[in-house]
Image 1 (cartoon, rainbow over the protein chains, first blue to last red):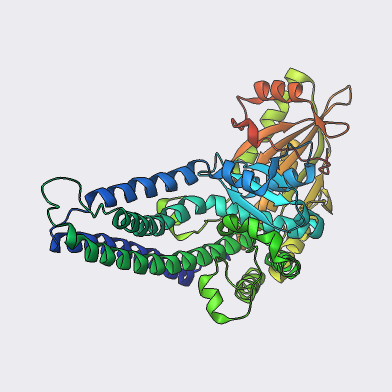
Image 2 (image 1 turned 60 degrees about the vertical axis):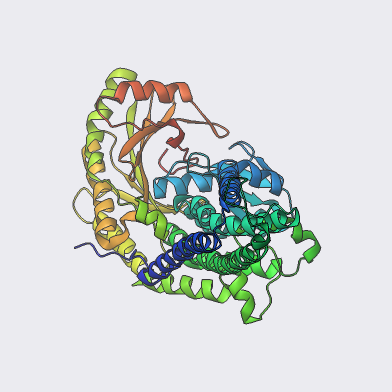
Length: 316
Length: 190
């Protein structure tokens, strides 16, 4: 019997599954609450909900479909050929052969901030990007660990999963905004049919819809962040098992996070939109425990702990 | 990757396919007959060593296994700049069958020890009268072969590679996706 050292982390998967289930529950509850509120006041908010779904869906689809181009543009990255970056391509070639996955495109962003990200809606359109700061700071083994982490994001289709998860948050936020403007211009929730004969009743309804939207947005925001942290841990794990060198990734993480907090925040604000797909979050982390709830990445200690567990597992 | 694997963010390590290696001796005969390429008698197995004691024990076991027997091959272990380990076996150039058996023994030992996912590729070297070098690379995770013909200065002779594919296509399962013919520059045994 061949023993396996590559057992999946059931606990992590269970927590991830639960988080996604809760997101789904919040979504369904949100829709039901809207229907009930509007029905109770005999109002049709159909137009607002319709537009929120269309706009929210459009934004989610757009960011998914053009994710590779948007991210490369935002990071100011250039795609590189094997001739321009032979070592980087060589490492990725070998990782692809080890993991049996198609080769992603490779890009380099000019910038001193040591970081890497992977994006693209599927493995055909995937791009793996590293900054010149990362290339300068890490040795080949550590760089390989970071690239394996990024390629695990591609294999796990994290861009798709996180975009779908964010859809709920986007929609709730849009609904709040539309309800607000709808109220501002006195449009109420009516669609102009026979059912909005009472414009005076629209004010409290829209306030309630806004309140519900805010609550849903807050809850889904926390859940999405939690999900993002779990997916980072999953990518760390898959990457470390792929290279068989969890300690190299751990060393890269300490190097990168040490260097990151030394960089002034002014530079980093530009990178914030990309944060969810970055290897390590680009803003300064502080030690307040509440901040971990809002962060897209698990704490360094949490990641290092998991990697050292994997290291023990591989040595057995 | 199934839907559930995607949803839960897990990757199953890919297990290697080992038996296809035994089609190499036939392909070697074809290569010699059709293109004048003869085996150099050198073959190598490339794998990614994992950290920790367990892998090193198995690696030592493999080397011991290969050094036993009357016609034991010369075995040499080298590392490359990517952190991968190459285990090189040298036989006489007309003994392709023994070479393949030895390479297969290395693979089986690693796979039986639970390190199948760490195997990257196997390479068998060929050369012709004019000194052109050719490697047949076996990708474990795909179960396919592809030719690799390095020239000086990190260039590859694509024409030769495609010609080789045409010739050995009947004997070996060649990799159809050209983007996966990744180069192994400076591989030992070429």
